[in-house]
Length: 261
Image (cartoon, rainbow, N blue to C red; front, side, top):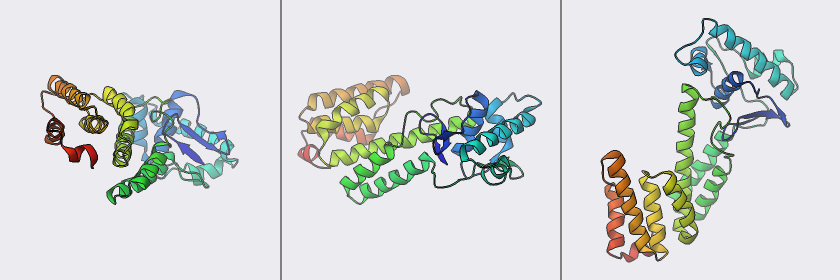
């Protein structure tokens, strides 16, 4: 069974999709998918679907949705609903869990595995391998996490964590490519990221270094000026010492910044 949460939700086997289109059952399946292999307490399922205002019949409604999901999974996996209830979507006494089935994989697990390989390679100085591993990790994404699912408090926490992990992987892949001397090619991507994340210091620092190494120190300094203005306006704070240090090195024409790590 293949489970995809890094984009629109998909739960399928041999191309047979099990995810329902109705919003609340789909939302329930999404939370079970995000926590695949782990028990999700019924209280958390109720909180996800209704937040602080569950109906008196919430437990019964959850049980009804579980029955519908088991039927969909049975069709997708081509096994009986009884087998699904026992082996794929069982009740554990206090909650339900979506168990791994067959050779499929949760795409978020594959992303994490490749990203960790990339981080290790980057720490070891193997920049080419780091770039390739992090690219493979990022290729697992098909769009924003759970793009077509209504998100309550439980899923919001998971989606936020996933998006932060994605951004970190992007930055590390850029760091690897920067070490490989690809600063010219990175400027467009980093410029877009800086616009999307006007308060994100690391993105701006990477853009500053790329511009400086590409022989565009004036634009590198302008990038710092915009970041400084945004931070002062929105947060009432100055850039971190690390970013200020990069700024000073650009002002002084630091040769090591122009050509080294």
